[in-house]
Structures are given as C-alpha cells and as structure tokens.
Image (cartoon, rainbow, N blue to C red):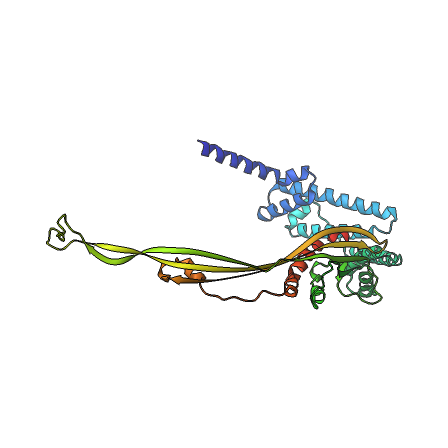
Length: 389
C-alpha cells in the first residue's frame, strides 16, 4: 500500500513539473524565449496544434517588442557604453528569428512572421562597441597605475572578442598586461645564530612558486634589476634545534613448542600398553626451543623554526606574519638473533639483518629540512594569495 502511494506521488510530481514547463506556463511567467523554444519543438512534431501556435505568436511578439523598446531607449540615452548591450540584443533577436524560421510556411503566416535582416545593425553595434572598449582601455592605461591597467586589459580583451585584428589591439593587450603586474620578492634570512649549510639557501630559493602565480601576481626568488616590487616576503629562520644522537636497544626472547619424537605409554607395572590391534601405544613428545633477539635503534632529529612575514613595499607596513616549522628525522634499526632461530615468529625473521650506519652530520640534518620548509612556506603563501593585490 505504501509503495502504491509513493508511485502515485511520483506521478503527480511528474505531471506538475510537466505542467509548469509547458509553453503556456512559461508564457505566464514571462519566460518568453523558453516558451518559444518549447512551442517550436512541439510544432515541429505536431504542426497542427493551434494552442502552441497561439502561444508562439504571443511570446514571439512580446519579446521582440520588448527588445526593440530597450534598443530604442538605449539609443535615446546617447551614452557611449550602450553598444555592447545593443549588439547582444540584436544577436539574440537574430538567433530567435532563425529558430522560428524553420517552421512550416502556414505556421509562419498564422503568427504574422516577418523576416528582418539584423546583420547591418549587428555589424554597426559590434564596431561601435569595439571602439568604445578600445577608447576606454586607452583612457585607463593613461592613468598609469596597475589596477587601471588590469581594467584596461579586460576592455581590450572584449575588443579582441569582437575583432581579432582591431587596430593595434595585441600591442595594447600586452602593454596592459605588463603594466598590471604585481611583483612579489621572496627572500630568506638566518637569525638563528647557527650557520646554515653552504648550499641551504641556494637550494631553498629553487622553491617553485610559479604554480601559485596568478594572472596578475608573480612571485620571484631572484630579484630582477630595476624592477619595482610591490610586496616583500621574508622567511626568517629563528631557531635550529638538533637532538642528541640516540641509541636504544631492545632485547627479548621468543619460544616455540616443537615435536621431539614419541614416547610409549606405560601401564602401572611399567609395561608398554597395547591398543586393541595389539600395537604399542605411543604419544608425540614436544620440547621448547628458544631464540634471543637484539634490536638496535638509531634516531636523530632536526627542527627548523621561523616566521614568514609579508610587507607592503608601498608603505613598508607588515601586513601578515605566521610561524612555521620543518623537521627532518633520521631513524635506522637493525636486528640479530642467537639460539634456535626456528623459534622466531615470521615477522621477527623478516626484521633480521642490517648493520649499523653512521649518524648524519648536523649539516646534513639541517639540509634535509629543506624540502619540508619549502612545502610549508608554499602552503602559507597559497592560502594567503588574497593579500597580494
């Protein structure tokens, strides 16, 4: 019974959804182009449906009238920024006309369809829109600041969409792009009091920041002469902590019960007992075997801690700071065993072998933090890209 009710509800919902998406419903909601699309599709299959023809005529007439009224209003304002909207509106009207034009002649006559050639109006609006955005872009570039240059870039990109070879548009786009860049200088200083390995800084500055660059923001680890940097990112290493070399031993015993032949079962008189077939009765005999395991564990760690500061170079203000930490850990273990190795568990046998190796030097331990330090630094910058304008 519940399943039947659920099916009925689904059918009702489907019918309601279908009713809401009819051309008539769309027309009442003033979704005229959707109503036109719906009517055209139905009339292509059933060209005799009078209701669809009526809905199509009403929707087509209303939306075209509204579009023309909007165009006339825009022209009347005399504003220079009207041409993109006019261009798009004419293009929409042409597209709409082509959709309806495929219907049979008798339907076109019933809806009073009259073909309009929009091409000249589209071309004229396209040209005027391109000229407007080009002039606006040039005006923005003349302000000389990078934020205006970015806006100019957007205007030039619109021109490029209208005409790929409009005047010197490629040169203007390149100029706007160049002027709109924000440059961020990245540097590292060691304030820990402990000398860094010889190539530590050189290796760290190979950090790949290009993948967190944006269209307008560029991070650079090697300053370019005469370039104006808008922000400075400074990684200040504040402390380097290296643990003592630690050696720890583990010793344990493992045992196992194994078969050790058989022993006869004796009766009270000390005689070997017999089974019903007359055979001697004997039972398995076991013994415990042992092995002794020794494990040696070597460990040494290094922690490099610091602060990442971001400065606005325009006013020298510190706009962001965050602590960071990177660690490298050296660990090595080796095992050997004496006694009866057959007593060892499989996992213990797998551990056997290896030999002592020397601890890495302090310089090597510091150097080994480099990749982790790069990763945490990059992560902080990536999370805070919004700071760089």
